[in-house]
Image (cartoon, rainbow, N blue to C red; front, side, top):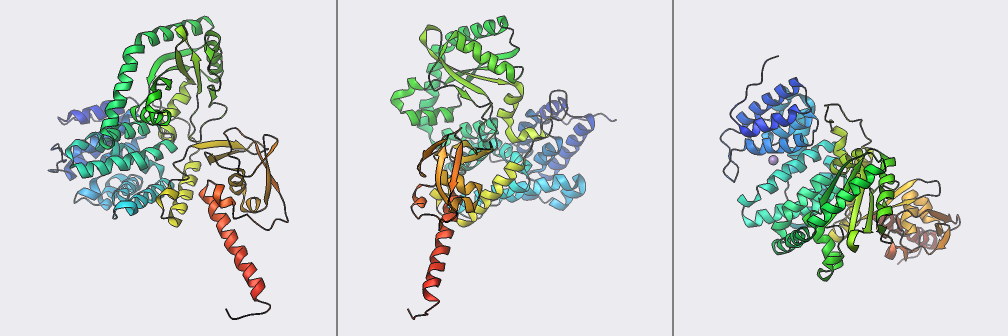
Length: 500
Ligand code: MN
């Protein structure tokens, strides 16, 4: 096998060094060839910042290589701007690197083309993202990396364009990354956009976190040491205990929800994260923490037995810690940790030894994207648009134990329509955790919901429209009401047709 000849490009060397950690040698040779091809295509092109265009392609690929992602995606990342910005066509990409790579590049190129302005642009953008997601989630993964590098080099752009790109990242890209469980990308997209949109608030939040760290670092080091010693003494298989600083934009949102006067009530500016061997060790470690320090009421969250809708798993607890200070702990095993950082992208991941991580089910994301795509086709009001996808989600259960993923504050009627239109239309009552509740009572995560149906019920009540939270329930109620009104009208009209 021939040696890889390096051009004098430090970013290329960085990329290949990263790929060496998990790729085979012929993959590296391939990446090198693709670089030559892309470099030649972009020859003479400069970024607004004045650096050669190829640096952006290398940076995009590098972000993905850091995540140890499949070489096919890396290759497409290197080529992602070739058909859009150079004389080299998609056909030439396909001829050289095959159909799969070309189809990824095509997907990214399609995402880049936006025609409209204002609200229309927002909707068009969202729709394109969901189309791409439904067709091939890998396209989104490349697009996120592309956007992260664009955000990192935003200063070179004029203020108006800078603002638009940052806002789009904050309102569209980051929530979608979050929904796909890609925690690391979500945080990067948010924290790189944040200072461009809310510069003053960014400064303020940054200062809050700095002050907290200055005051607590030594204390947290002591607490972490106690946790390590106690877990070792108890024979728990732990691998790492570290402080996790809250990212700035999520800290900002937390402060907004509590009010600036209550910054001292934000207990997870730095949380202590414990990584252990397996699920059993997670609960054992939680036991140790609770034996050492008393937990705050209502602050123990078991996302292992009830993961968040995006797949996030961990145990969280907030305790009255040493010297009476309040500290949050997050406990998870290495697999959960990887999933929390990479989410759906874990599907295309390699581990440290270069072995493929077992494939995970990604159908849910494809399904989610098609649902969202359909919803988007029917609405034009921005507020309605944000209802489903960007809301916080809750988990509720059928009496048979099936999980249902609904937006926060969804009602039993949303639940009923989620099962089936007929169940919704004939819904006459609901039991939550074996108690009768009213049909507009907001559901909470973990609730077991049983719908009581009445076969003779004529259909939904118009009042339900005021309380349902999902778009799908709303549109089904509306279409049923329209239908029953028109059939009622027909019944009145048909026997004795009258002129209006
Ligand atoms: Mn690009």
